Image 1 (cartoon, rainbow, N blue to C red):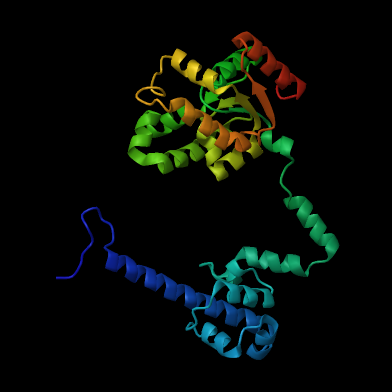
Image 2: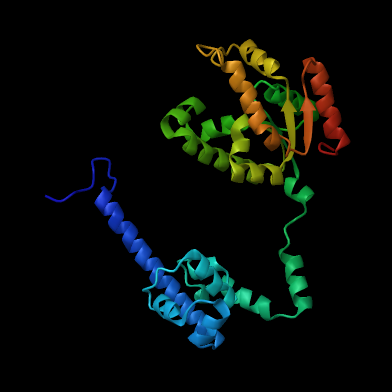
Length: 305
């Protein structure tokens, strides 16, 4: 009796291999067809393409017939010889029937003055316009992000949000349950979605985010480009003592290496946190002192005017 799909609805190993083989065959056929069409559009015989790319005519013939499992290196040579990007030869959508390809052709054949006008029209807004009046406090737990964010919000009359609360509203469950049910990957996906909603719905806001958001490259890049970011930091022992003062003993519970791990996390993320536009060190300062410094920083940089 043959293998069947398992109880969780996942493909068996043989089915997965069959699907993978089919996908590879389809890709090879698609690449070969694209190469042939691009060569014909340029009006060059295979022999000339061989001379330009350094790929043998026999190899090119096999490639165009969908029989050649060409290496990435050789395919890159062919793409360069055809004046195309390598990914253009592999995408599923037909590039010749796409509006993007049509526009790209118009741009490529346009005069330099026209190209400059097109670039000016398509150029994204300036960094300041992209960030609007959105302020984001980043940093490790216990630095004072939420407390300072709430206080600055009340002082300035700006809305204050915590991204984890946005995630909880979206998912209908606490973040701890989100992590238990969906894992780190699922949480990061919800985090990115929540950040997108905040950007779409708030031109002016003070946002506090979880310390680990910097470990998600795409989400962090979005954060840096759409918010005025401030790294709120403190010494490791203050991070730990503040978390415990909030009544959360989990960081130390049954873990004698907790402080060592905390320092390791801070060290590993330091370069990422430093990408923030500004920093606010709350070490050895009272809440009132840190609040005053945050407000001074915001006013000095025109972030709350």
